[in-house]
Length: 443
Image 1 (tube, helix red, strand yellow):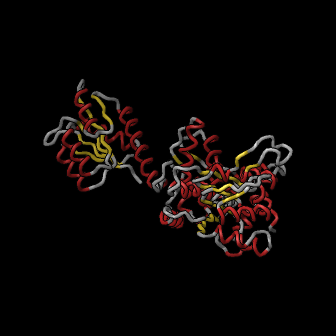
Image 2 (cartoon, helix red, strand yellow; image 1 turned 30 degrees about the vertical axis):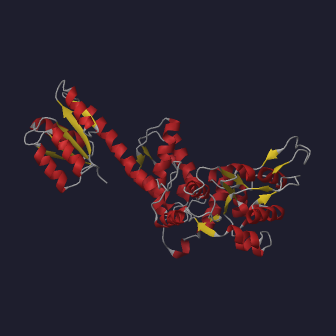
Image 3 (tube, helix red, strand yellow; image 1 turned 180 degrees about the horizontal axis):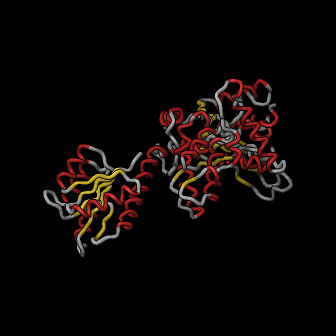
């Protein structure tokens, strides 16, 4: 969308110079010869920026500034002051001007100020789409552009006064961990601990020790008593990621804690009472796991008081561009880059890709592009070549592959490219090694 500028300046030559310079820089620009004319135009139409001289007939710049901020607060304003009129500039800033420029000025300096305000305004607009504040104490950014994600956030709003156990489902990398934080920090427990544990990263014994703690001497390396996450999270929330990876023994112990709100440390004989809210997440089909005998049905029902399914990124294409811009803004400072956005071709490539690693993979792609890009925009050359290999070039039914097959082919390609290193491949894809193994196995 074009950035629209109105120049209010009674000197014809100055006004024309400013308009021509802004148009050369691709700004949609109009002019007004006095303050009254400028205000009428702003009342009748929408402008992103007003550039106004302080001294004008019919309505001076300060009065115009005051009226514009009252009727169109979203319009940014740069005031132009006469030589040595610092007091006028101070008055303008106090009355809401976003910047000022003293006469005589260099057109390049004006363009720089306009660019800065445009970028700031674009960031404000993007934040409206990206950030959904749910009464949280922490600043958590959530993309809520697509209808499906807005529905997810609406569910979270409606249950924010509930203490129910929640099961988050969806593929690896869709944002289950982030939404778990959103649920906690929008709940009445927001001032209490939020702890998380990935059940797939520990052996059974270590996981038991992490969850429940242990007594001194419970096993060879237990040289002192240790509190578990259950006890540390008392009053708050404990989030268990990849819950399907729990062993049958730990499933039974977790069920007892959820039902009785008490547990025993490893090697302990005294029950410890806690008040903990449980959130769990999985990328597996737990009903199939129950049928296969690897997951307890009673634990599933306890966890699944409320299920929230997060759709994969390929099913919410509208989120790809705002997410890309969000990750661009996130990683540019880290690598000391100034990149304004994406070329249309790059955006098309990003939209057409299927993202087996979902949001996590998209972030990895954008971070890589930030590192490699040398121009003001992310170009196709900075995106992984493999993304282009999986563009759908035709809509002939016999040439379209199922998404699962595309994901599997891409995963195999990445593993081969890394010389068979599945751990590194899983990291680059933004999925767990277990998920990668399962993806490659399903042929």
